[in-house]
Amino acid sequence: MKVNHLFWLCTINVMIFYYFIDLTNKVDGDMVTVIISLVTLNMICAASFYLYRSIFNPITILSPLALGLFYHQFNLSSRQEVFYTETIINISLFFVFYIFGCVLFFSKKINVLDRVESPLRVHLFFVIGTIVFFIESYLNNGLAIIKTLSGANAYIENNAIPIFHYFYMMIALLPSCYYYFYKRKKLSKGFYLLISTACFFMIFNSLSRQLILLCIFSTFFAYINFNNMKIDKPIIKLGVFIAVFFILVGSIRYIGFGKEGVSELDYMKAYSGIESDLDVNMFDVTFNLYTTQNFSTLNNIINTNESELHFGKYLLQAYLKILNIDRALDIKFNSELDSYTRLGTIIADLYLDFGIASVILQAFIYGLIVNFTYSNFINSQSLSATLVFSVVFFVIFMSPFTNYFNQFFIMLCLIYSVSFRYKFTLWR
Image (cartoon, rainbow, N blue to C red):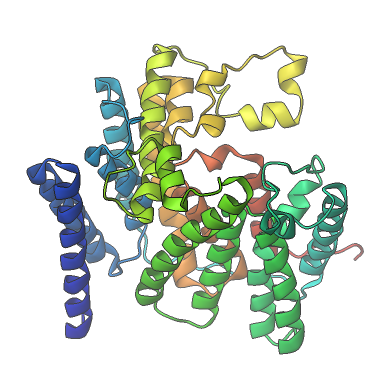
């Protein structure tokens, strides 16, 4: 590592330490526990850097989930719960076996080749997705972003077309695809900029943080990979951008359901169960609401379940409902155990279906998947590898919310991404 890189890394570390020590003083937290936690996280990051020779690696990718757990000790919200022993065991085992899965089959060189030379299939998904976008806009009486800026709660009051809405959602991956073909001189610069702008607008109009993040991630990784750039510096900038982005989109939504005379920070404090006189900023409030409190939901789900096993019912819930298998077989789901609606982190579904054994096994498998897709991405300038890694990164980034690995949309994204490794023809 170069001296200037080491200097900036140390500087950022000092700033992080100062920030959380100051927050500890504000909330009257346990200084020793906070310092031990920070040192432990730093040691894990340093070890992963030694292994992968990069700050951005399969282990540090799990940082959002780790930071969400780290924030729990500050007890910012009245909704946070004291963890049961079983919850602590499940969380600890998930982290340990995820890391174990990453390092056990560590591989440095995996190359992926694309066999698609034409952007035709990208155009096809763009056309279908755009048609669905205009139909849904018509059914919802206008563009969501305009309605929201006018004071309506368009994000909540949104009618989507069943099944076909997935084509609209898939637009999130298209800017990265178009950038790939632009770099290979299959598209003109003007056409690329025009159609990418259209994609970004349609995705931003959804006001869905998830879709916007997936679009940002896939475009970001495409830009890094297809320009053969080192990722460490840009990923830090992306992290800052994402933090600002979450607050910005929240501000836009606030226009639709905020109350007159109440500041956004005070509204978010009340919404998050944080005392109004507590001296914390919007980032602390937002991060606590969207990550830390979900661990309390996990704790509540584990306690409510009472060690009952559901044998795959919750992991496959999205597929059972989309295919109406739940109705055909009269399968009932307890709303108190619905980790997708309640947001019980990536761990909840794993625990509900097969208990601690499932948490251990699937955490290990997730570590393998992330390590494998990361190696593909790092070692090949492949559109398929870039898209697959972008989707997997998105799932891990969203792990403080719920388990997106078992969502139907993610499966469609992975199938679409892998399809670029194959060349389909209508005739021979």
